[in-house]
Image 1 (cartoon, one colour):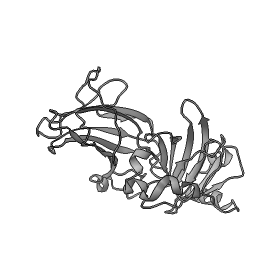
Image 2 (cartoon, rainbow, N blue to C red; image 1 turned 30 degrees about the vertical axis):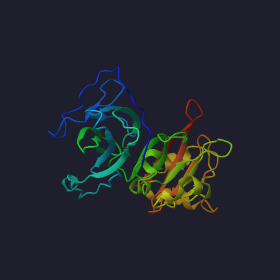
Image 3 (cartoon, rainbow, N blue to C red; image 1 turned 90 degrees about the vertical axis):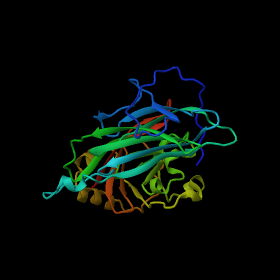
Image 4 (tube, helix red, strand yellow; image 1 turned 45 degrees about the vertical axis):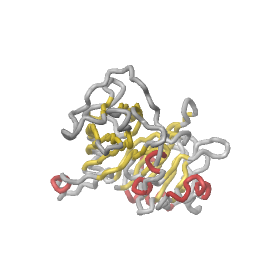
Length: 321
């Protein structure tokens, strides 16, 4: 996968070490995270599930004869990315060594136009479940020498003991490859096209996509929607068959009162019309019942719709663990 990243001849910011290098290997190439109040570059606690954070990195080759060849960004979710259903016999030590890794970006650079330096900035949504996520950044040159940095984010949520997972998430219209338009309903992760378009493991997570209608109105579509066939292309290894049903109520009552797996299932089954692969134009306070491919039932409430500066839709979601 090749992605055009902004190249820089110089960077007029103060580069601070996010942490010590992961090894004592050759200092070439150079890689550092930008430290500031705006950019995340070191370990921190996250107080809001699904928070939006930004990281900026700077990488530079040691010399023109050894340009940069690859940039790799991964995130590991500990103990995993999905919510845990705690039981009376739950033993946290059983999950101590568990970790689920996701490749967020893996790009190689052109050899015809050597890349000797780059500054790359990306914005991402944090996990919505209790646990940690370790972000790792690695730059490699044409001599296969690498430099890396990493940091850890920690989240503790108040609903860890509930039988369902609840969270808020913001999806963006797919205007660029960096727009977070793809949603994994159980984990609550919103991912951009740059992560999912050629990554089978990421594709297998996706349940819904923000897909504007022909008139430009926001809507949600499943991977099996006919309008997505050409947009997704053949690179998708698996298309999860999520089912959507629009509830007749347009207020918050049914959503607020639903707090068990049984209640989610009941609301889904009370809609007698066939399941849809698209919501059509969304409206505020609209409620959508869904069933994922692995038989997880839940509800979506449209909280807010924004058209400027970037079209976005804010959703509140409840799903059985």
